[in-house]
Length: 152
Image (cartoon, rainbow, N blue to C red):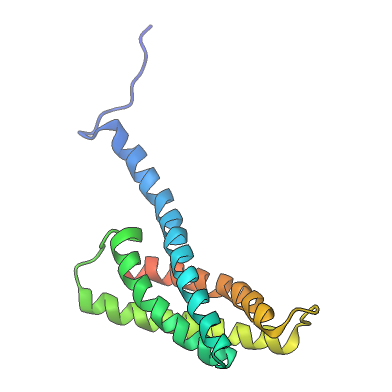
């Protein structure tokens, strides 16, 4: 009795495995880019806070700088330059990112710092805790919109 092999439809059997790795790899690459951008973002925000700016102002500036880095890293590394309409990608990226970091993230930071107990943490440390918690919401928004609308 011989073994039954799946039909070869003119494709290498490893192509399906490569595609599975690619699908699984995109979220991981997004996380790596996110960590890099988070270091940039938090570093700049803290420097600006120490210079006397308010948390929301410092966050808006730091996220704006990190957003520029994020576009290029996500386009080239996370989504491998998907899409060929650069102008469209830039416009959609900045619209979705601004909603994510200046709307969702700033809104969450405001609510967290205003309404949650600080547990004895100083303002600087609690601003970082609030930003970290708020980043979960904005990063989820960003990944879903980049993957679905921007770099398709």
